[in-house]
Length: 371
Image (cartoon, rainbow, N blue to C red; front, side, top):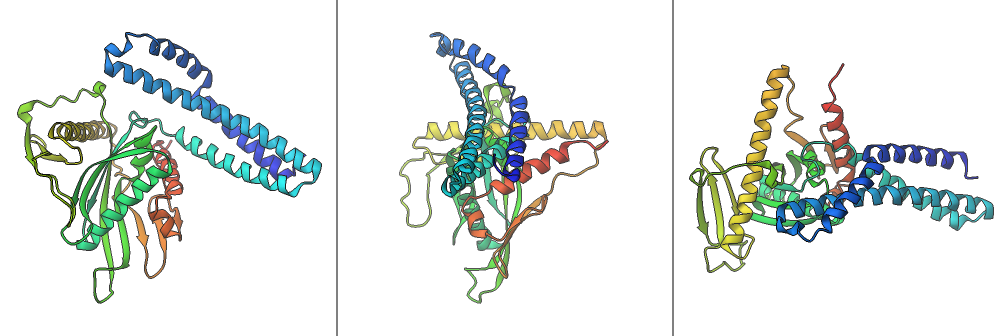
């Protein structure tokens, strides 16, 4: 038998996985998978593209959830056998292999446990992420570009596809703003905890006197809209301008007016897209961004109405949500959860799991009303 510490850890992971399976409701998911597979096999399904995509997307998601639970259960059973074999043979190499596998399983179960906390209306959707430079001049523009890289690296680490719709480059360095879409299961629910103001403290690389500079950038995260959202945008409510796409200094400029800027006149919301090759594609992408922004406006209005009815006097979970210090010491600290690390380079290279997981747990706790 494995030593008591390993046995206790295996028991804890088994209990956690059982709870996850209960939340996922594996039996009900299997039943729904069977029904969706029948619908997906219908050759007439694709006569309605939107419905077909919804069916196949839901089918893929449920299959993935059940597969993850079953795989983790199988791995947990196998690692127990591996530990027993290591003890029986007194094999240090096998024991080390088993310990490594146990750590990997624990990380995978923890990640899936966090996913079960994402039960918001839009949490399962893809996400639109907007990064805007704030106070701090050229350092803030550079900081916004660093954040853009941080999030795209995070997406790459998790195998999520992303598409940059628009980047507005600053004159000297960095970016004024950027908009990109992230496709992945629970991308919105996961990344939404990153919304807020991010603060950077460092020795400015743009100051010839080497002084310390504090700069800010704002991150907004929106759910991608679907046809069922019913956000009607009359043509009379928008103004569409076209212009030539451009890149940073030294890059060629398009010779046609393919970039699109859409202004929503009632709200003053302005979105643009210049990443696609044609004006038609850019307009479609810009309209998707506008739909998401208007959906967020509607969500906020509904939330304010509900808060007013409940007499909710509590504020939001904060504007300045994370601080990144590169001088005089190295530290990244989340101001909401208290999570912190001295490994700033790994965080800026997209290793955000610890911060995002703690943010999701914190948000769930904050949403639970006190008795």
